[in-house]
Image 1 (cartoon, rainbow, N blue to C red):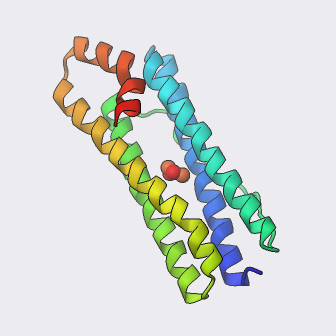
Image 2 (image 1 turned 180 degrees about the vertical axis):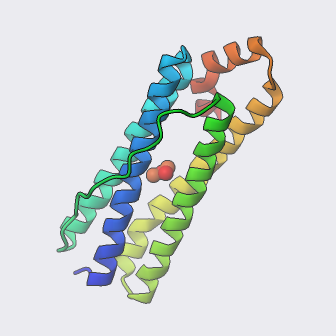
Length: 165
Ligand code: OFO
């Protein structure tokens, strides 16, 4: 059985994952209207992944005798300026999520809830991967600079970059 404190903290994370999904969905839509098809596809799939992260948490909370709460979400912005800035934001957002997961792990230890601690290790590993992926993409973007041909290739290959990393 989850403690109240941990249940609340897990539900906060449900919101963080749901908001992450919304942020990436908004990025996907922005990229799509800018004609950046590959980047849009990448962002749509990131958005789907975040939704799965959210669902996994809800099911865990319910399984442990708590109640997964669905709450209001903050609306993401709709304009991201440039694709470079957008990927920088994605990176910073992942760092924010990692911190949130770390705080949650900390609470699970304080509450001596080792089942939750164990469950959260999946998220710890996932965040390492997502941060590394975002950094790999930013490195590629730095190489491209303002080169239009580079952007064309990047947009075409962004899915592949993610698969290779
Ligand atoms: Fe939920 O992994 Fe990214 O944020």
